[in-house]
Length: 209
Image (cartoon, rainbow, N blue to C red; front, top):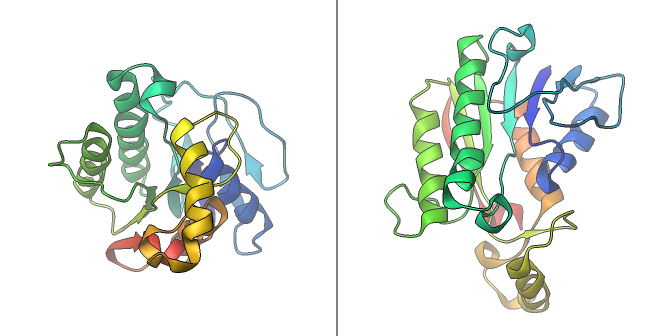
């Protein structure tokens, strides 16, 4: 299969990339990136500007898209910049991929995603889920992890505080509240892309604990 992976340099995306390149079933991974990444015989990594994605590239036609794009308001610098990364970019990727006939889209969203939420982060996550539904993918899979475990390049204070606490309490917490290791999320997303089922499917946090 041919896979498009966006967000390949992030915590979850890098795990997806590693697994996909090692999977015999995956013949090619197209990972549009802003900077050069480690080459691999199965990897095509075009340098792109996500504000002006190339609309006519043939690599938009694939078997599935996995979207692991995401940031924080602190890293992005403003709510507007956050919305661009977590809503506008996934929507444009989805639009172009669907326009070229790609049938499946797998999104890394978040626990609590709700387009009607009063919490900005949850609202944007819910809005992108709603927007992707409107694009008409025969298969749409939405992963909704809770707190993501793993070593990030960027510092996130909330995760730095909560990960040790939840790690300690993990054995007594309900599965839905436990840390979701990035590798578990990646495996779930790649599995959904490799074995698509018609319709919309939600991967809940307890399935990735």
